[in-house]
Length: 227
Image (cartoon, rainbow, N blue to C red; front, side, top):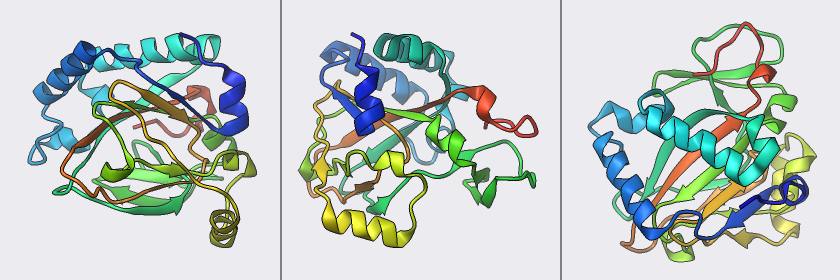
């Protein structure tokens, strides 16, 4: 089930329907529930799931190889977490690029800027070549539609580097946005520099997504460690 790598390079995203069968989705949700990721009084809901579940780490590695072939074999999963959007647990994120990575400690290293602590975890904006080397995969555990918060993207905007706020505004004004509706069991692969936004959910139907981030680990400064 290899996906053409040239489409990811040219467009910045790929959508593949029904990567997981219905019973595999149910098994995945059951496994995630056992980890406590849908219990927001539980610390697992905010952590990196790859650190707590060897089973999920193996799934992440296998999925990259199956979908991206030789390219996937060069990638290592570095982070996995749940995006559980509903009417009760709702959020809106305006047009943006994903510019931050999570590391184990704050260090003043050349090229790494905009340090923050998010849920107690150090985050930083790394050099452009690292952001270009990251690939994000979203496994849809529910049907994801316009009504329950499917993301919108601007195709091909990932190859323009880090964009300023005025450049983002210009792109949003002049280019056509695409709503990424994906059925349960489908996956979306995209580059983090691709412009995207996350609208509010407008209905009760849940929109649970397992997001996994991959990178060529050798890209990170030897002074830092991935969280």
